Image (cartoon, rainbow, N blue to C red; front, side, top):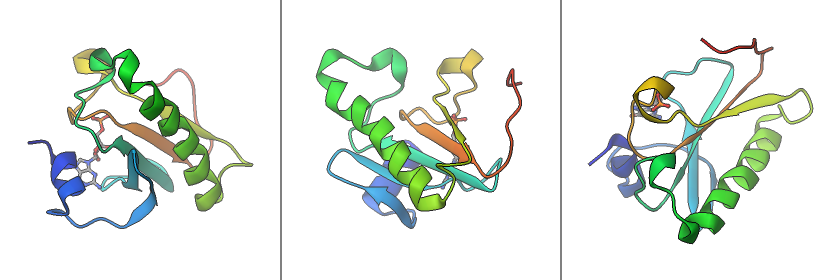
Length: 112
Ligand code: 5GP
């Protein structure tokens, strides 16, 4: 079981930043910026390589939730970055699909 599955079960306490029937959002434990929120599907899906057409509603909800998170955290107007790390080269470390919402400072490009 991944750490995010344990968070969804409530085994590891988190404060919800946003939640609905399909996704759950909470602050990253190791933030890389003043705002760093993770949005995860309630369904256990390893990553982008495992998504299917039946996940379309959840995938859309991840982005709608990102907007809600950005507005709640006060970074919508200033701007922010959404990231889905996928697999080893993508830097994925937790194998439960998640969208990072990162903001509160200026971002550089390209990422490291
Ligand atoms: P990845 O590297 O897989 O894209 O991102 C995983 C993220 O999960 C990392 O930013 C890491 O800090 C975060 N993370 C790992 N374990 C926990 C945890 O127990 N609680 C929270 N809130 N975040 C976690």
